[in-house]
Length: 367
Image (cartoon, rainbow, N blue to C red; front, side):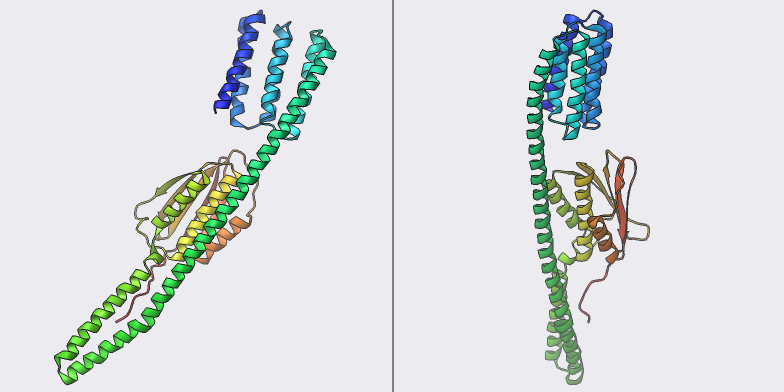
């Protein structure tokens, strides 16, 4: 933004100097200047850049033809804008703009009867500098894009590795909980029943004491099973925590909205992973295809109690899209847990929305 303001200030100063020194009709010059300033301001939006740059050159040319006898300051403004274009236009766009400016400057030189040969030689030297600068800028931009892609892939791989490790750990804890439930829990239940029978038959207090101790052991076993499964049902708060970490790494702003009662919902590990993957893919899609740095996420509960998600990001150019590998995998993951996903775009937004049922089942020891 600071660089743009500096360029804008220099552009305004050049125009102000030209109007003050050489314009015979101040009001008409100011009107044309306001058009040029508007076009220059829109350069900051980085959309339709080639047309904006050509428009700036044409407006400057029209001002020169209508109101100017001096060509040097006009050429200087056009060349200044051309130098700025070297940092924004890519490949063939810069070449087209250089050709347009060559025609404009050459035409102005002939119209004002300037030394055409000197103007063309000066322009050729300047173009050599501009083409070199544009090539270096493009190479640097390509290196930045490659670095960002590699960094994004590295972070994605790192996150996948962490999630896989967490998934393995939780699966192992769940397996241990099942084993405790199936072996220790059932045996303690059987032992309590045997002690109850002995206590009735023998009528000894020692059997009742043993039964009490066995009941306490069974209760402790139940607590142990639930403790082992606590990470299996951490809920949406854990998913939000993971997304906040992803937000910090990706330098993208995530606007979270959670409807009442959602944060208290318990999710299984599979459901948590799927919800995280859906949001992760939506963020990746926003950064890669929409060049969006802000995404809105709404998590709620549907009328039938399912978890619902609505993920939107702004788009600046509507393009036809097909489900790539990421979106296809995302839909498949949600379908595997009994849910559904819709992916579509409007004139201004890309939207991912869907829902999946909540599995409330959990393992506890019988008795």
